[in-house]
Image 1 (spheres, rainbow, N blue to C red):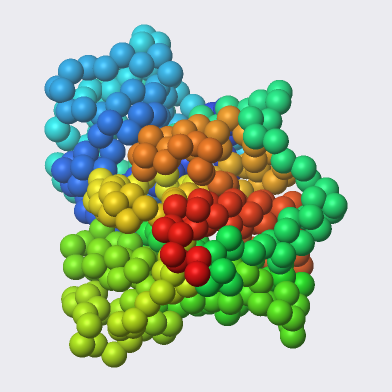
Image 2 (tube, rainbow, N blue to C red; image 1 turned 180 degrees about the horizontal axis):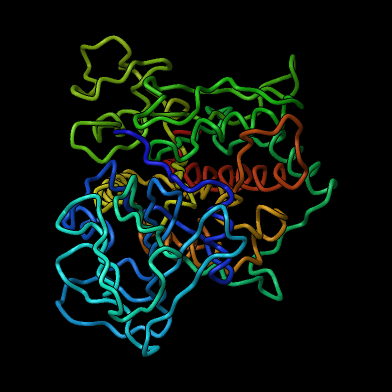
Length: 444
């Protein structure tokens, strides 16, 4: 599965965003990848809320249409006083913006491509736009699209209102060097309540590209005091992690290991038979999977396969499960991924392992947080994404932890460290809950 990326240049995106308030664009549909057809458009853009079409041509124009209403294919004209057409090119400093002639009409919700009367995108399932002069929207064709109706690309983005900042943070956080020091010391001095266990084992589970491996590298960097890249991470359509890995974190280059082991797995994938298998997850939970076991997506681990640990104890088991989700993808998670999460949640509950959620890339999801990480708990948008994620995964809001992994930085940042260390602290708290539920004989 290839990674679908936006064709917007930096200048085009800036000009497009200037047509709105404080919003974020999330790519839903890209015609060159998913097809120049009405069916492909509706499959990805129906019932997605406010959206904007971005059409590109060889004349150098980016033009399209915005509606605040859903596409549903009901065959009816849709009134939308917020709808407009727009055009952007290099020669104009500001975008052209055109509202409907009567100030009410938005679009016609048919089984075609986006139909805004004057402009019908993906006309007859082709890379073209039909122009109907004087129909609902009035504009000069040369100014709108340079009289070039042949498309080189067509995209549709969800337009998400970011809101602003709350007057008071909805979760308290101390952003001081003393707090960072306290968290590091607390984590280094942690001791499980069960005598047979010296390190809590935390399993990271999530879709491809969510940031599981990056989270380990980021945490490892904090305790090492410099940037590290022990776990393989990057951008790809399929999981870069193909082995089960157990990562020990050392305090300093030659220091003692901290009492926490982070376990990394293959990413979850939409396709059946791809990505991490449910039976492999159960074997990991129970401690049967050894470090560096090479996953086989077609065949789960069995007792007669090298890499299977037959004799296990409490120290080999998983003590806390952490689901890792990209904040930029919360609203875009497919039904298949949500279903896989639900299946894993059910099995995890049956085994009795506490569960948390890491919501990564909060800085990429919200410009306010990108500008200042301390805004993470005052951002309306991040709060809304956490509530949405809670509803999707069935995890209480209190169990969802927003973090920023290190990705392009060369130096550590205090605010980033505090968020990451706070997440580790909660993982150890949840591991304690697991130990407290174990039979007394396990402590002997």
